[in-house]
Structure formats: structure tokens, C-alpha cells
Image (cartoon, rainbow, N blue to C red; front, side, top):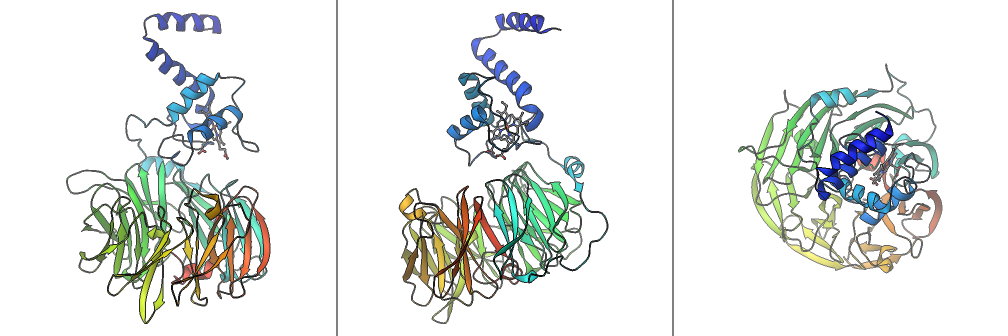
Length: 498
Ligand code: HEC
């Protein structure tokens, strides 16, 4: 049918439709014509990212309008202001923030079909560079979706490569530090060989994913999804599928997965569920990965472990109390006072007055809670300039560093607060680039240097001497989100989240 007849057909069809139904038809037609080739007919993604409200949670509507009208420079996303009216673009924005009518299917077939093997056979078990392989940093640059492998002695980039769109949750290392695994917002899991500087394999484990964990024996990867409601077990070797586990409670009520972690001393993965009151322990050392369901008092959004992995400390986004669960007995052993919205996933531990304490930043309130991990009592709530997001320290430094990343106020977003772990007092405030957002710290293997992100497209990594607090070096980076030191991560340093 030529365009004229198609147009006439649509006018005629329109005569039988209400104005609302016509608008729906137009936006769907516009989507199919202009967007589906890259973003997928069902909005599940393709060469472009998935366009679902769950995936776009961090994209504000005005920004979405601007993206569609003007496009994004240096990407395949072109502007549509010459092809679509303002109203049509607004209707498309409304569409992409509308949930799908049914839970999208992403099961074994879809996962297996998505699998990409980039490297066949084995690559040399020796780095192709001379830098200390245990003192490397993997820097995630979310500005243009790249990662940089950085020499942690010279602070020089070794290699920069593209990642999947919008990495989510920290990357995870194999126990020997040779491989790094990334998880993306849209569900992609990628395995990168640091020694050979090559992406080995990729697979799409979900539509909207929270994070991944790598087992302590390095053999298995677990991915936790919001969409669909599932956990996905993969072979760490080649990311081939082991199995999909739908996340449902005994009565069949399904749930999103808040987060997954590995608990090496227990030989298990722990998964927190967001919509049912259960935490799951999945053994990776036993045949068929048996699941143990632990009943919890409140939904778990975020959690933390003590260094021995005996206790899980969990919090609900809107709960006032944190729950301490003994993983051996599966029982609630204490409730802790955690006001606001603690970010337990970023918690750290150290010894204070002979007691192990944990500290967590807070996404809503300008404070850091310090909790005694024997009595589970609050030792102190330390006032900071603004609500933070990340917190880090190292065994060889007296300071715990935290940011003001969750603050709406630019005067605290550009500051790093250094808390003295011996006195629990704020010891220093650093402003690496006044007026620009500072976030996320990581230390070198020996704890002598601290690397801070300037979270801007024309941002940087700022390297500080962790003792004198003098700036040593500044490396330009495109919105560096996190940076992860191989040694600190594979040894589960008490100063870093796991
Ligand atoms: C040629 C491929 C292509 C087409 C056609 C296309 N896009 Fe995109 N789109 C992309 C890519 C690639 C990105 C990611 C850009 C980046 O790296 O920031 C993107 C990003 C977006 C984003 C931002 C997503 C986010 O997570 O921030 C929105 C919204 C979007 N596109 C909507 C649309 C709409 C609506 C249409 C149709 C009118 C469309 N796109 C057509 C490739 C495409």
C-alpha cells in the first residue's frame, strides 16, 4: 500500500476510534517506526538501552524529552525534533515510563540465545603489561560507558574499553584477580580478562538487573533481577547458563531481587528479596545449588555482613530499624537503630576500643551511623555535611572517607568528609574540585593513596596521599563512578564493601 492509501486507511480507521485511542495508536506507530529498530519492539532494548520505567528510574523526564528531541552526541541516539512534534515526543516519553502490561519473559531460551563468546580457547595466564596485577584499579566511567584499567603504582591508565550501557552494582573479581565481571542495568553480564585486556564472554541474564556476585571458589556467577523476578546462575568460565531460579515465596508470590552477595566462608550466595519477607542462602558448593529460605521481619532492600559472614545486617528502605540475622540459626538476633535510609551496601568495619564496629552512610540524612557489632548498639551518629552514598577506609589508614553524594545541596556534594576511626570525630573536609560532585573513594593496595571521583562528564580521578592529604595527581575521566582495587576486593578488606 502506498503512503497515500495508508494515510487514508488510518483516517478511516480513526473515524471509528475515540480521540484517546487515536493518540495511543499514534504513539505506538511512532515508536514502531522511529524507535523499535534500536530499542526493541517490546522496549526490552537492542543496540539501544531498554526503555522501561524500571530501567529509566534514574532518568528524569525533562532529560528524556531532551534526549529524544536533541539526541546524544557521539552515540547512535539521534535527535527527533525534525521528525516528531513536541506533543509526539511527550507522548513517547509517557510511553517509555509506562510499565509493560505483563511481566516480560526472559527465561532460559532468551538467556541462552543472548550469549556471546568473544574469545575461544585459553589465553596466556600472564599479564601483557608490567604493572602489579594486584594493585590495579578497574575504574567504571558511566559518562560514555567505558572502563579503564589503571596502574595503581604509577596512576597511569593501561587500557580503556567500552562496557555495556549503564553498569550497575560494583564489578566483581575472580578470586585470583585475573578476571573482572560487570553487571549492567539492562541485565548484561560481561567477563573481562584483565591479564589479556579482552572481553571474554557476555550474556543477558535479565531485563532489569540489580547486581551480580561471583562465588568464593570462582566457579559461579549469580545475577539478581528486578525484571523478570529471577535469580540467574551462570558458569563463571564462559557465562553459560546453569539455571534460572524464579523468585517466589512458598505461596507463589513473586518478588524482585534487591541484591545478591557471596559469603565465602559459608560457601554460599545470599540474596535479599524486595517484595517477600525472605532472604535466600544458595549453596554453591552443593550439587544443584539448594536454596535455604530465611524468614525475615521486614523486606530487605540492602544489606551488609560482618567480617566472618555469620551475621547479615539488613535494612528496608522505609524501615526505622535494621535487622541483624544470625545466618547459622536463621533467627533475628537484634534490631539496630538506623534512622533515615542507611546505605548498608556501602558499609565498612573496623576496630574501635577493642570492639568491631560497622559504619554506614545515609542516603537521606546527614549522618554516618557507627554500630558496635557485639552489642548492636549505636556507638555514635556522626554529623556530616550532607547525606552520602559511599564510604571507604583501609586497614592502614586512620580515616574513613565518605561523600555527600546524596545531598541536593552543591555545598556538600563537592566535599569529602574524613572521619577519624580512633575518635569518631570529623577530622578533615576535602573539596577536590569546588562546585563539582565528589564521590566514591578507593585506596591502593597498601592504603597509602586514596582515589576520589569527580562525578562529571569532564570529571577526574583525584589521587591523594592518604596520610598528608596532599593531592598527588589528577587524571581526566568521563563521569567516573566507582573504582575498584583488585587486592582490596579479593582480600575482602574491612575498609571496602563486599
Ligand atoms: C539508531 C538507534 C536508535 C534509535 C532509532 C533510537 N534510539 Fe534512543 N538510544 C539509542 C542509544 C544507543 C542510546 C544510548 C545513548 C547513550 O549512550 O547515552 C539511546 C538512548 C535513549 C534514551 C535514554 C535512555 C537512558 O537510559 O538514559 C531514550 C529515552 C531514548 N533513547 C528514546 C528513544 C526514542 C523514544 C526513540 C524513537 C523516537 C529512539 N530512542 C530512537 C539508540 C537509538
